[in-house]
Image (cartoon, rainbow, N blue to C red; front, side, top):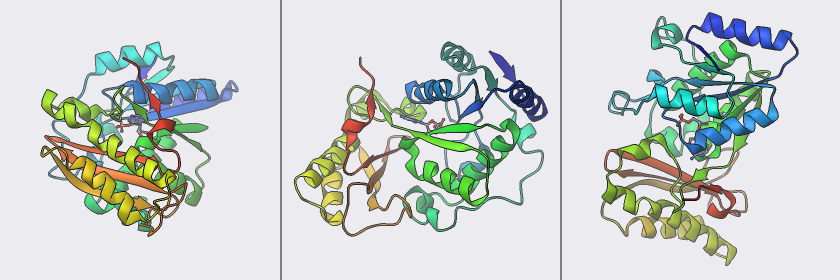
Length: 291
Ligand code: AMP
């Protein structure tokens, strides 16, 4: 596996791969890799001829009170995991190489960030879109893979690609969960044992909403109440939001349908956890890691 740090080297590597007729798959990450990231790499390996993955903790997507300073990092371990999953090139740029100066001209998420995390984390998605647009220009991938775990992010990136005519095919892979239903996340490493023990309440609440929907409950208010009630089983969890939203506009719907998204965010200790399901499919349609 090659490892590159400079955008100019990365672009040269990609252009050489393309010149030899190979399709480039790309998996951007912030590192501290887990099985959720690794499945995205597997998908890219299947769908493309060569795979680039990036590890970059993007400072401009963190709010001033968020966890940029404490975000977990372990490049040595990430390097070995990415190589095991057949990544051909790991791009690990220093922040100065990505942002020689503060970017002034950035893609904006428009109304797609008016709800869910977009409403709670001002500037977050502009930071995400900016780094993804830059990475697309540096890597020039044919296809890029994102996780459904961060559904609002994935939809925004799809929309940016469409609206700005990036020549990139965007694939969205299912959420990968631990054996007890907890969506895998680098931020789960913040949880104490006690906090980790109650983390499954988020996916439990989502699954209850899915089951109720199958049984005929479709008012968003009622579905959201089920999630709220599951999460309230532990005093350690502080619900940030639960909302049933339309998958295209990410705006709340009064009545859920098969393809509506039920999204939840909650604070648990130092971690802010997010999770979601497609209402008609539930947690069961996601991937689960066995012990
Ligand atoms: P991150 O390193 O958290 O920025 O995530 C990098 C990519 O991995 C994003 O496309 C995420 O949506 C995806 N991802 C993170 N966790 C999971 C998971 N549990 N299942 C599937 N994809 C994930």
